[in-house]
Amino acid sequence: MRSKLFIGGKWIAPARGGTFDVVNPATEQVVFHAPAATSEDVELAVSAARAAFDTGPWPRMSGKDRAVILRRIADLILSAKHELAHMEVTDNGKPMPEAIWDVEDAAGCFALYASYAEELDADTGEDIPLGDDRFSSKVVREPVGVAAAIIPWNYPFLMAAWKVAPALAAGCTMVLKPSELTPLTALELGAIVNEAGLPPGVLNIVTGLGPDAGKPLSEHPNVDKIAFTGSVATGSKIMAAASRDIKNISLELGGKSPFVVFADSDIGKAVEWIMFGIFWNQGQVCSATSRVLVEEALYPKLLERLVVEAAKIRVGNGLDEGVLLGPLVSSGQQDRVLAAIEQGKAEGARVAYGGGRPSALKTGYFLEPTVLVDMAEDSFVWKEEIFGPVVCIKPFRDEADAIRMANDSRFGLAAAVMSEDKPRAERVARALRAGIVWINCSQPTFSEAPWGGFKQSGIGRELGRWGLANYLEIKQITTFEGQEPWGWYIK
Ligand code: NAD
Image 1 (cartoon, rainbow, N blue to C red):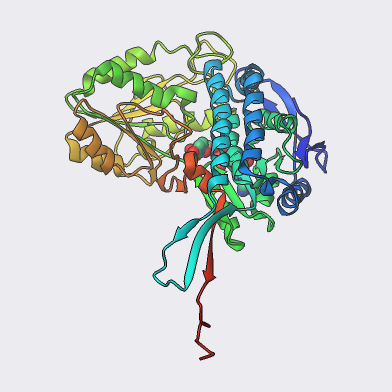
Image 2 (cartoon, helix red, strand yellow):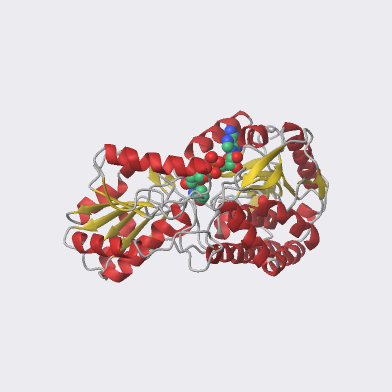
């Protein structure tokens, strides 16, 4: 584990020498004292990124040369896959197979953006027809500059990859601040990019608390762009901080995503995707389909089967074989989720399964997979993001009713619809107000496809070519080619 900050290609102790505890959520043991960056370290990191952008080789290299290094990063991630996954389980709690999946996805993300970096070389500018043949105009794309990435704890390594890979492919330099709950794998990325030959200062990694490290980073005048993933509350603060200097921002925020299940659905498939949609990563997933709407005719049978299947889920330490539900990330998160369940009950919801700590697990921030029913449409648990393994289920009458209920939310990150009737599934998918809609499944995520939300779920899109565009400025270059003088002042 790395006990220093990664700045300008070197490992540097935090200016004030502080640390913060990293706790294994399955054992409640402190496993590491991570370096706590403050504004002095942020200053150093931004200066390193600024110098690397303004005078360093990275933005001036061809996309092909940047791609060589991005591919080396991907390969090094894969060769350290098991160590990285083990670290992620220790830090975040997720089951080992999920951690392996995340690390492989992160490597795939770097490899994909390597190919996009190469494509940039062929992009010598798009000619724009102007309707005035005395002028010609073309559009070129250039890196935004110094980007700051501030990320959450639910996918610590993957979220870093989603931001670092496109920023580097575009030719930007970056300061990355991981969540204080899960800093371990982000620091490892520093060692990986060094070994891959990334020039000093192109990627800088500062671990620290939100107010001490994230805030000065988001307010720094030499940062050109902020890419943030996290809660709506922090996203709103970041937007306010960015407004002073009119910084370019992209925000990936929370969700309360609906899953509409029609009565013609196969019950086995429906229950499987409902469970994957809410129990994967302990439900700590921004796109988790945490509100399930089931057509009345199927509702009783589906609920019965869901309860049977939820009871079979093995809860435990993510390192143990066969565990499908690990602990929540922290005791604070466990308290918040338990409090939400209590509020749900107080407002009239009934617990169909789970609802508390598993009695057999005395240590660790565990929670049973939980199924809530009978809540009102205006209740807290139906409206607000719980960010835990808690699914709320309600019956609906007909298609129009389902669409109305699904869209009645301040969020719009994701949604899912299940039906054997393809035209209906497609129609409902188009009617749902969300940036991502899954048909007959929930959650599969591909680095090639755009990711991001409508409404309060965010601004902009990550992944795919949309993710690259996040880190590129658009410039028009217009040339006067007239044979005669322009003739406005001088006739
Ligand atoms: P959070 O907002 O508490 O923290 C996110 C990051 O912001 C952390 O690194 C934190 O240190 C930093 N931060 C905190 N205060 C700050 C400040 N004042 N200025 C700058 N930075 C600050 O979120 P979290 O609890 O880590 O993550 C959970 C949230 O993230 C959920 O709401 C979830 O829906 C969302 N999320 C969204 C996506 C997506 O793609 N839309 C993906 C994952 C998580």
